[in-house]
Image (cartoon, rainbow, N blue to C red; front, side, top):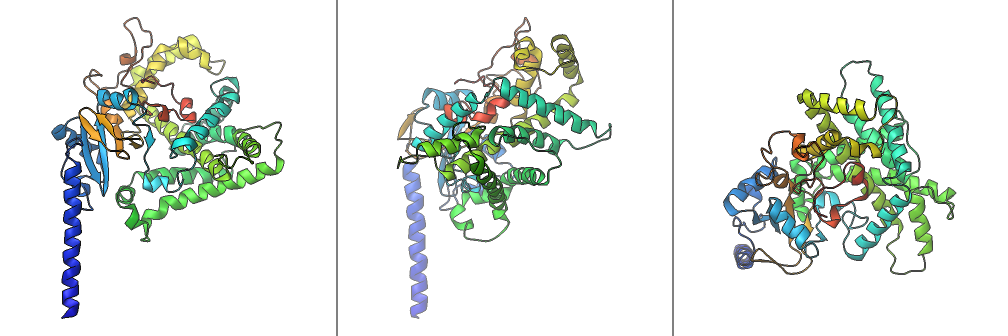
Length: 452
């Protein structure tokens, strides 16, 4: 009898907790943007298609407007749709929306170290150092340009080996981009047949593929529960740990031969900075931040750029008339006797427009990375509490009917004037719009044309 009474009491207490949680959530929603009513603990998880979250959120936009609230598990999220809403938040109120939210299935590997998932002073110091160091080593200048030219030639030679037979270019493209990053952070490229290099790229590929699976979405919604349960949802993190081991091994090798007066690459420069600041108790230049910052460079560059290239090739296959115009411009400006250079870009408006349209149309980062508001923030008449997660839907920017005529069509001409000169489009935000979006290696694939 006592056992039954205890069980009933436990159930009653649980019901009270759930009702209190639901009432608290309802009370908080009075000042938040509108959205579907969440269930206790589950939030709106059951109302979203885990295989196509973007589509689910776009359907909610039709009902609640361009700014609305959803609950992913117990986490409250404000979603921004369309160019105007995204610009007002990330540009006009950049400081308030500058916090970095976490993606549990990814960010647990970084533990808020490195650049991408850090906040506050750590983020500011590491981002400033990364940008300055890469610029000093020629980011956007001749030295990096020569490395890209060298790798492009190696890629072409690798493709020639197929002798015209059908092949899958996915891995070749990933290796080429990864090698450019390796040359910057490690100081050397790898042969495409190098076993360790092949393993590294397979891990990177597998890690990113896992992040898009419904298992990862489930983990992101309920990280506290799933972290304690064994299963395939830990596969992504295991890949990350192997990548981290590879990076750590390389760092140890470079420590052994480091000349503090003549650093040769990104890791050397970071190690020199660690030595310089070793007496500073509040320094952010630690071994963990070095490992994670290096991981971030692979994270920010390899899959984003190689995926863009893959989409580009597929799109050009569907649009042979665009291919023809690009070939004509290449022959007229570059010819066939030399490699292209950065200086050529200004004289190739159609090719430049096509590259931008590929990025807009392919839309490879439709949700961007999550933000958080750094303080209680008034936005469009609502009050968004400090710490609330914010997701800008970049897909709704790139396909915004108010900004793009026939956005579903692939049309490089939208980036050209009537006279055939290149023109910027405001609603072009392949890596978001605010200062946090300007990750160092992303400049290898684009020069942003959205608001800065």
